[in-house]
Length: 521
Image (cartoon, rainbow, N blue to C red; front, side, top):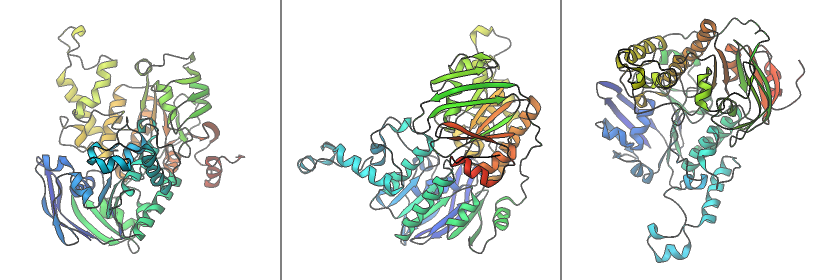
């Protein structure tokens, strides 16, 4: 159904893709894997006609759909041809409702006005649109009100809305998925993958990128492997071993992060009691928790049980009820700026909306909070009241972070929006560490990053905890990662603390705790 021949793409002097070829049959689920920066997302954007591809000089090579050549120059052309795409960074409008996002440009109107007027002047029928949106959501087994604003919802719920938008299209023939399960926990991901199998059974072809290799092997029929923008392998997943696939991706082995644990002393840096945060879809309903100074504490729960609301409440991004003590001071200032001044920093799971300035350079993204809150990187020969930045110092610091954190880029002046997801995450962590926080709360730090970048990020947390004594709270859906780096793991259920387990606790104990069952240990 789909065939690509010799696809090449450059961004200035940088080659993103070089002579990539692949084919996908109707009803096939085809995996596309590679390290961050290997060209996976670029290839999907070429197929979807994303505007930035053509604004940066287009691409070379040929694309065929049912044997007919195509070269889309807009997503509208791709959608009209039956191609849908779920983006790694969401293409949703936060101010619009769930139903409006799902049915954008396909809204249902009242029959009478549809008959009397052109479509652009027809009156929309809210009841019909809500019904259509509910049908798409129910197909994904998602029970939410389609009339609520999308921007208020948790990240995993927004991911399902993006997926619902694409699978609800009547003409869908090819579905492009860019890290669709990165923000989903194991249960949600399993439900979504089952939905993909149903779509494939109906003849929809699926091109699926993921860094979760077991997921790829369990879902896909065939697999194409990219390395540095080139095709280095194409195989049947049933005959290829995990080791062989990893070797083709990396050309080298990856050392997994891990720590030598010592029990933290009874010296809480943060104490919260009856902590309530009203994050839509992720409410905390009365959390009691002590975070010990110098520890790495994991937070895990099913989607919707509150782990992602913890950091937003602590930093003051969302209002909270209950008691919060930082270094023994009850209810410190709740604004984000005041908490940053107290040495607390929060890395949200939402990279684009709450963490990066995509059009600004790497060095500016790393330095801007330290410049604003700590008066660092000010020009030394000018009065501080003028607050003029020292561009040379900012560049030097950016270059040092690029080396230390292995940020793959063309240099410190490159816009951060041009980086792969894993390298954007490294920039965010470098930005946080530039402030030298005493307490850092991180949501889903390895979401959408490859196995090499994932280990690098976990190593960074271990290093700053060891060298600087930084206390770190990691809210994650990846239990195995938490077990490798954390001193303790707090399990939340229905917005409250259900259990605190040692990382060495067995799988059955964690399974019982996460599902809200009694835990004896």
